[in-house]
Image (cartoon, rainbow over all chains, first blue to last red; front, side, top):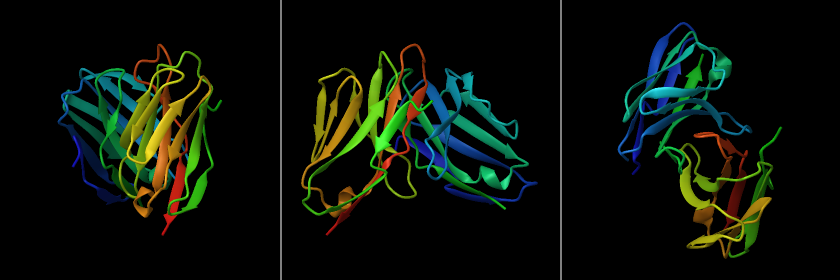
Length: 111
Length: 111
């Protein structure tokens, strides 16, 4: 059971496809995050939203496009991805500046 | 430069064999240090937050401690269900929502 829900849990997409990852948090937090987790690497922060406003974008390629319609929902739109983008994508939330809580992740495979 | 270094990379213990995991960090003016547990195929699960040197937190067989340069996660009499990857993260001052993660320690407890 988690306060942060991610869908889908698994996604396989071709390099020309367009897909989206969805995240919803039920914790009443005001900040939401996307992280990328690859084998043998530290978690990489991709995007941060505070009160629906994007506050950080860590040089992420434009083929990843975030959307935060409200403080409870976060999307990651994917298009023309590369095989090296295959990874576990983690959504997280926090009350700004405090402990972050993660969802179960979305496993993405680009073929 | 590396902000957070975890060691060892992997650890195998016999059930009941106590040990410690290390997390060393280079940020100054630490705002918080966080420990997470991650099971295969799942998102990280929050364990502890430590804020100042000398602080200790406990949960079942786990105890986290903090000094000015490193943190230890002590595991007392581990059980096979403690097998997981343990992640450490630090939050530097004036960075808002920026958390720096280590690459984790993969713990296997053998019955």
